[in-house]
Image (cartoon, rainbow over all chains, first blue to last red; front, side, top):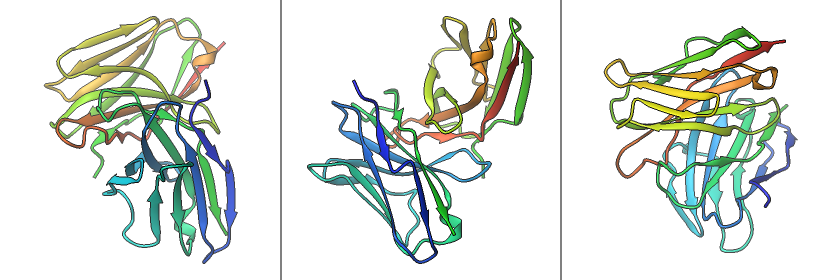
Length: 115
Length: 114
């Protein structure tokens, strides 16, 4: 029973390029969450998605960031025109339901480095 | 404005002794609290949780205590083992429609020495 999968594990981009981060939730999980961890910080909520729906994107920067969870395939976090401040670890989590008491299972993260 | 604070960046403990990790929160709307453990280059792994209607929850070597009046919780690990060496994150979620949104502390690096 595979856990949450994220790829790539490491991503290097130059300023101005696009970054695409992928997340496949655990089998049977239809709720996906993205968190960002800046250096020396805790994880911060970015966005919550269900299949084909963005439920809460209150933690997403207003510009350059977007997320989707299509009917088929993984969830994608897209960062356009990356800047050095986007360098961080991006974690995806999934859960079978949306209850706050339902454990969120995290993937290994994608470490983005912007040069 | 940090709503979940872990004021000790690091903690060092001898194998076999008790490890106590602390966490404070400021948002009185939080009603569910979790501890996650994280090894380098991996994602956080769920460890134990507690609802605000309880003041203690125990699972094997791990016990979480919640003091609502003080807005404080702690994780006790006893006996500590070298494999427990990791970063421990305290997280909280609130009641209402956004209870899926976890708010994390900055973490405490626990080192258990053999």
